[in-house]
Length: 144
Length: 193
Picture 1 (cartoon, each protein chain N blue to C red):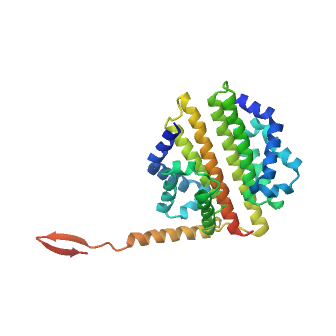
Picture 2 (picture 1 turned 60 degrees about the vertical axis):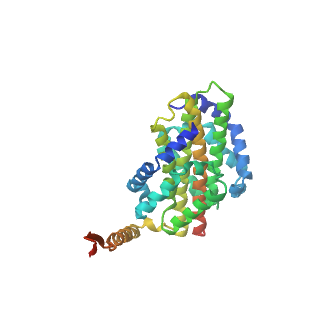
Picture 3 (picture 1 turned 45 degrees about the vertical axis):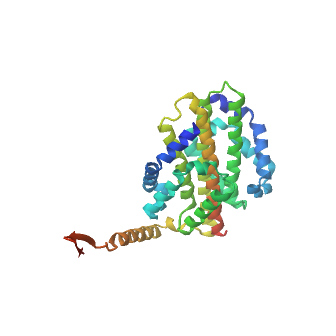
């Protein structure tokens, strides 16, 4: 069942990425994202959604999760983003994935609830590290 | 509606859970600065979350007290010299312990409704999302106060400038000359510009 949820996210990646992009650009709490190239923003989100299975199953404490998000924090800091907007962006992304899975009715049957709990576990583990490393990358580049 | 049984289970195990969380924070490599904070102070703070779990998780408090409490915590940790990533890591270690406790209950207590676990998990995640966000806000306020650091895009003039730069870049891409169209007429190629 968990595989089915992951497959659904990857299959719907283009529409989901477009939807999240539009939410970010219209949200006053993430307004710095309006300064990014629209296409690049879409590609960033799409890259995560279209390979969400790969990302969720990685060991987030090391390897590419660590390096990707540390670099993201550093880059956005240099582009002038406030850190709280980056944290909010990652929280919104996590919720967007969760809301989409819920709305698609993939957790309606009792047997699917266990997979729902597993999906929250994986999503949380991944995004906790994503937020931690983004903050670390941002904070280190501040040099305080 | 809060999932009463599971929440009560956490609250009744608050002391044991808090001790275990404190132990982890004090020994974890990502939260080493917490060793400078008194163990009792740390215990009291975490115990407050666990013992009043239903209070903290209720939606009304998220907008009011949670926001205020965690903004202040961010400021306080800044003044204590604890780096923001460490503060965030401590919050996540706390969440993870509570999470493990809840999902372990799923395995040993078959009478617990999966819907309840799912709902409580969702509330737990939402609570810590807000906590992390508000701690960050409080910390950023102190960065401004102490070092005068404000993210450049927070300055309306810089923000407008960045938007104008983006527009200009997009316009340049649109204005790039198109390649001439090839028209095939009786075997001859005519270039139309």
